[in-house]
Image 1 (cartoon, helix red, strand yellow):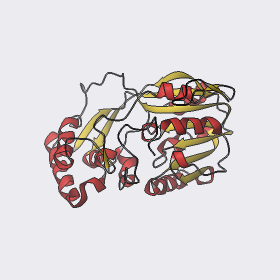
Image 2 (spheres, one colour):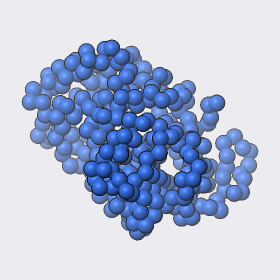
Image 3 (cartoon, helix red, strand yellow):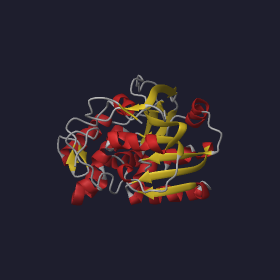
Image 4 (cartoon, one colour):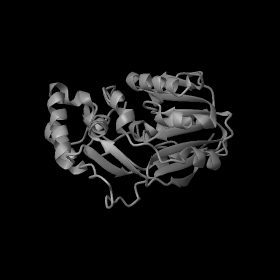
Length: 299
């Protein structure tokens, strides 16, 4: 059954990021440097708590924050993403402090215990948000926090002064549409209106206090290769490899031609976006106002 708080007109399916895992770590830009230190100060973390990272993908966020916790638990429905996360944890010497759970956030297994912090690295919009926010509230220790992380959308973006051409985003988007159609794809479904907002009301109904907004500055100029740019496209739910079917090889060839026309050297440059962390504090004695209810219920 479809519930309030989910993506309007779209239902999750297991193909959302099918085939994207191997491209994710290379294709996606990192979070802004200093994120771990900023969260440690804001949340008064002492290295002894537990982190729950929902929609963890290949473990980028969970492993980046692992030094702030005694244990990190990453949850993702894509087995390929978790295999990448496990390999990354092994390489970083963190395998003994990281646990990976193959599940949707809506179907967490019992026995996970309680957590100091729960994070959503640009993943909350894919979930049944009302249900997940309520579940996370119940899994957090008193004084714990839920943190939503994403690029800071209000930041001015400029390509002036870069040492290499910027990535030709508009041309790449047009090529994807030529192959997959004019409406954004997402798994087996379509997202004609994009992903939803309104997180403030959802977290408030679940009994959280907040939000507090923390901006961690980016701005560094990163060099990106043609291979990085291809990986970035194939790491997206809207252009995941499986969506192209037998035309994937032709699409990648056309994408590489487009990229070489934009930069014959094969090099691009991008300014690293700032990261916005939106913090919600759990209140064990807060008021939960469930979706569709006429009056609050005391928990």
